[in-house]
Image 1 (cartoon, rainbow, N blue to C red):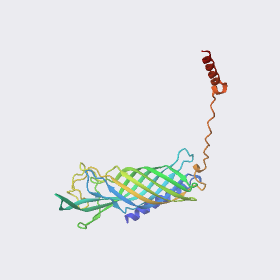
Image 2: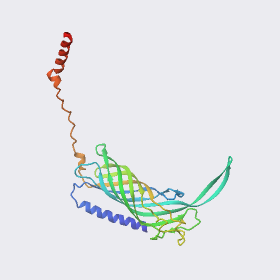
Image 3: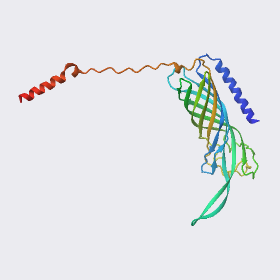
Length: 296
């Protein structure tokens, strides 16, 4: 139900953006793009803990780009509205076995993992440099973004099944709803008239913590199975790696203005005036030197 509500919210925003853009002049340098795909998520605990990447994290959303009407720079600026599944896998407990290797006794640990999935709304503010190939039918781009986020809901489970999972209950003293970070990525788009179809990859690097540190929330003595940490970590930022397919629409039938800019040809530098060559000063100087040598 919550995922369906998220989709309805994104559709409402999409409709609002389409009405706004369509009301503008026909030559507006805008594109609106639907994105969807999958990826992986990871958390960086400090002090370090045993963690693993969590795969099959869905992502989908909207991308709006504005291209300058005057081609003063190469690229676009825009805003994305994304729904991301994020989370982590944490080795909360292990069993040990010992075996002799040579003259040493070595320990092998088998971890049992706690998995937490977080549903987040992401708002990247994007700068997208790019260039065109194949007569403006292929755009290749890179991206850099400042990302703001809000965590909607969360679920947890114990992968070994020894403890029941369920809905993660948020606590103001323990959990952070808001977050921020940076992102970078690259991709391409194939242009078919006003339709753009492409692919992109993006890495979100989190700076904010998903859990408040132990100075604010010391232990889990009052928590249930949703919190596997005896003491909250000092740092807990999350990262995401996303792969997305894109389908976009350009609101300009003619094409972007930068396609029609005629680059001025570089003129050859004018030949510099050589005073000695024009006046014969070099020849005169050499003949005078020869005559002076003959006199001596």
